Each structure stands twice: as structure tokens, then as C-alpha cells.
Length: 275
Image 1 (spheres, rainbow, N blue to C red):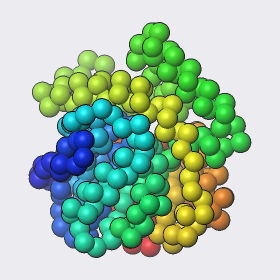
Image 2: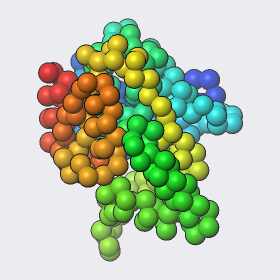
Image 3: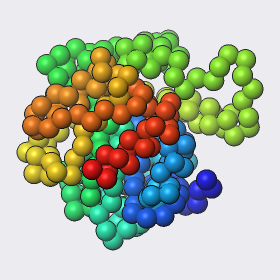
Image 4: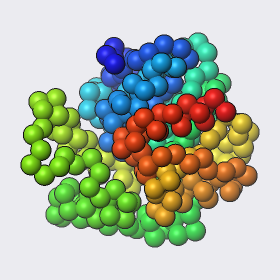
């Protein structure tokens, strides 16, 4: 499906976003790559039911920075999502966030609950809720140190192995990459550096406001991939669910199931929102 591309001017940035379909607004908040592209196939599948909004988070890909990067990045990211929703709909919207995007989504729900009809937080990598959280924060610091000393490829190899992401998102060896694919790969490399510098160590330190989340619990669904139950981000979902007196909704695939199993993932997402 052809998407309509737009830019929303916000303080300190221009947010690139795309619209597909019609119906109630469904905002997709991207994870650590910050880019709307991995959601495209799932977004196409959802466009018959929703006005699907995909966007690049501030500083990633096509969303430009007009000044220095704000220090309070999570709050800035959730403010950007708030501004997008304000721009696009006068009604409460559906929201889906995955990984770092799930952290942003949780902050959005706490600070702007009136804008949310139902919010799905898929595997937010929150170390602070885990009993071994300090060890995970130390691991992320080690990955960053590896990045500074040996480069992004070595750092991401170590990170991906621990997260269950090894090999995901890489083109097959010898595959011919189309021109648009080359553009996306180049953006991905830049995004990877941005994420390693500004997000890897910072976002897992997020401390969720459990009291505020309990107050809006009927609007919140914590989720995880069936293929990633043994890994850190899914564990964070289960522990946070226990703190809230909730459960985890399982989705197809692993941490990036929306990209590896888009049709099944979109069907499950629509099912959960309808429920």
C-alpha cells in the first residue's frame, strides 16, 4: 500500500511520518533503530482497519534535529508522540510501541493518558524492574565500551547474541540489494551509531511510574514475542506485569516479530486491540 509522507514541525526537530489506511488512528512507535520501515508490512496489513501512523523518532533517519539532542530523551520522545497524536486526531488513539518505543509508549500513557484508547507495550527493555537489573546495566555499558574501542559491528554482535537477535535484519550473503534497500541499509548504519551513543545505556534506566500505570491499567497491554521468552526484554515485560497485577499478551515471533512475521503479527495486534 502506498503511504502518504509528511513532516510535522515540533520544537527542535522535524518529525517524518507516514499515513496508511483509514479508521481510528493507530500510532506505531519504533524501537532502537528509530525508523518506520520495519513496520511497513505489518502497517499495510493493518491499514484496512486503522489509519496507521508510522514515523521516525527524533534524530533517526528522516526526522531531522534542528538543535542539540535534548538530555531528557524519553520525555522528549513521548512529547513528540503526543504532538503527533494531537496533530492527527481529536479522539483517543491506539498506540503500539516495541522495545525502546515501548518505553516511550509507557511514558506517553503516564503523562498523556487522555490521548490513549489502548496501548500495547511490546518488550520494553527496562532493567530497573529486574532483580538482576544492575548486571544488565553493566552489560550495556560494556557493549558501549566495545563500540568505542572496536566499532559498531563488534558491539552489535555481542548485544544481538544476548538479546536473541543474531542474524535478524541482515540481508542474506550474496543477495542483491535494491537501490531503496541500499538507502535503508545506510540509514540503519547511521541509526545504529546514534542508538549506541544515545540510547543503549540510557533507556534501560527508565523507572516506570507503577502507580500511574495502575491508574490506567484497563488501557495498557504488556506484550512479548513467543520466540523471546528467555531473553531480557520479555523478562522485563513479565516482571512489570507482576508489579501491575497484569499478564503478558503473547505475539508471534521474537523481539522484532512485527518485521519477521508481519501478517501474523498484524492479525494478533488487531485482535488484542479489539479485545
